Image (cartoon, rainbow, N blue to C red; front, side, top):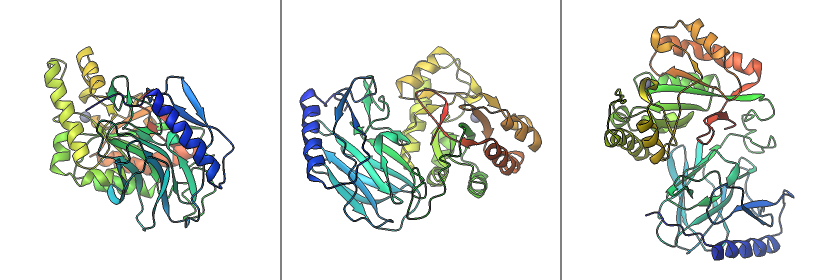
Amino acid sequence: MVIMKTTTTYTKKILTILTVTAAVLSTATSGAETLIPNETGTHNGDYDYAPDTVSMPLNPSSTDIVVRAMGASGQEHINLLIGGAVVADWTLNNGFQEYTYSGKAAGDIQVQYDNDTYGRDVVLDWVYVNGETRQAEDMEYNTSTYGNGQCGGGSYSENMDCNGSIGFGNTDDCFSGNCSANGGNGGNNGQCNGYVGITFDDGPTSNTGTLINLLKQNNLKPVTWFVWGRRVSDNLSMVSRMQEVGEAQNHSYTHPHMTNYSYQQIIDELSRTSQIIQNAGAPAPTLYRPPYGEVNSTIRQAAQNLGMRLITWDVDSQDWNNASTSAIVDAANRLQNGQVILMHDGYRNTNNAIAQIARNLKAKGLCPGRIDPYSGKAVAP
Ligand SMILES: [Zn+2]
C-alpha cells in the first residue's frame, strides 16, 4: 500500500529528534548541515534544514559496519545485506540509534526496509563502513522513496517511505580517500574526469561468470546489466554475482519486438521481469532498456508507470553484429563523460575487449559509473 505518511508534524518531530541527538552525542561532525527532505520525500527544492547529525559511532572497529537509522512507529524492520545476503537485521526505535554489524562479509552493501505499512517510515542517516561515514543521500540509489505518486518515484533521499533498499557501494570502496580498514580500492575518487555507463544486455548467459571475472580482474565496474526476466528465472543465483560488479536492470521477460504490443502486454513483460529480479534478491529495477532499442509512446509510458526510466545508448559497440575486438575497443574509445555504451553478455570478442577498454578509459580519467535514472546519464557510482 502506498500512502503519503510524512506529514508536517512528522517533519517537525524529526527536526526535534535531530536537534536533541546532535546535542546529546559527543561527536565528530562534518561541519555541514544535513538536508532533510520536506514532506513529499522528494528532491523538489523545498528543504528543511536540520542540525548536523554526522555523529561517529562511539568506538567502532574499522571493520565494523554501523547503520544509523530511526523508525516512525518503532516497529520498522530493516535488513543489512552484504553481497546480496542478509547478515543482520534490526527493529528500529522511533529515535535515531546506531546498529552495529561486526562480521566479516564483503561485497555490495544494501540497507533494506521490508515491513512498510500505514504509519511506518524509516529515516536512514548514514552507514559507517571501511572506516568512513557514507551519508544516505550520497549513495548509489534509493528504491524506497515515495514521490510523484508512487513508491520508488522519489529522488536521492535518506527517507525510506516504502519497502525497498538504499545501496551504499562496496565494503572495499573508499569514498573519502581516508579509509582505515581495507585501504579501499581507491573508489576512483579524485582520479575521475568523468563517468561512463558500461552496459551488457541479454544475460544471464553461460558466459556471465566469465565476464564478471574479467570485469573484476580489470576493475571495470560498476556496470549495468540489462537482463531478460526469463533467463533470470532459469538462473536466479547469478543475479547476486552480477551485483558484485554492478546493477541488474530490466530488458523485458522474453525479449520480443513490442512496438505492436498493447499497453497491458508491455506491462506484463516488464513487471514480470522486475519481479523476478527482486525475487533474485536485487533491488527493484529503475531502468528499462527496450529490446532492439525499439520504442514508442506506449512502451515509454509503461516503463514510466512501473517506476523505470527508459534508456537506450549513446554508443553501439556493434558486438551483436560481429564487430571485432578492436572495433569494440574503438567504439568504447568514443565514449564521453556521461555517455552509455551498448555491449552484450555472450560474445567472445566482447570478453576479449574488456582489458583494453579498462586501460583506455583509465588513461583518459574516465571511470565506470552508475546510470542515473533521473538524468539517464552515467554518474559517479
Ligand atoms: Zn537485447
